[in-house]
Length: 157
Ligand SMILES: [Zn+2]
Image (cartoon, rainbow, N blue to C red; front, side):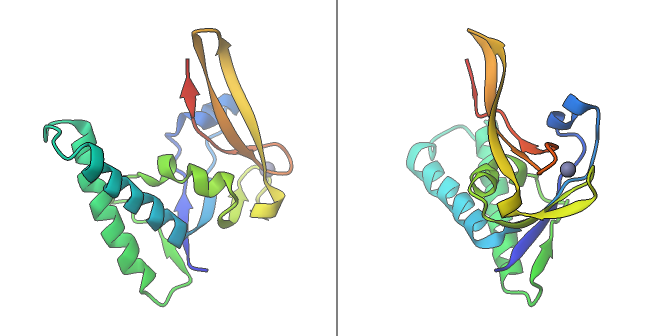
């Protein structure tokens, strides 16, 4: 299956937890990603088609359309693995969560171990910080040695 080679940029706050700024590299399955973004476009037309063009949500919609175009173009290429185009807005990080949590990726490189792991080797756990009304949490992906490879805030109180 065709994959997108997605290098996680260091600015993502999750990696500050263990004072590391590693470059985690995912080989994400391309097709489910495209479906996610197409779903976002459908939702936009369904629920947000009348929003002011000044809203960030509107800009995200435009960026999503651009991203789909690019992904579909890449899908037709001969390469088995497509390199992420850093000129596009990084909507991958946020929206790849279901792809990552459901193991729809080929491999993930843990820079701490310097080992490429398959989706089967990773484990998902719940995380949360804070308490009562000042809490947030979600799921995260760990390598077999317990290094955090992906995490995102799925909820906050
Ligand atoms: Zn590791």
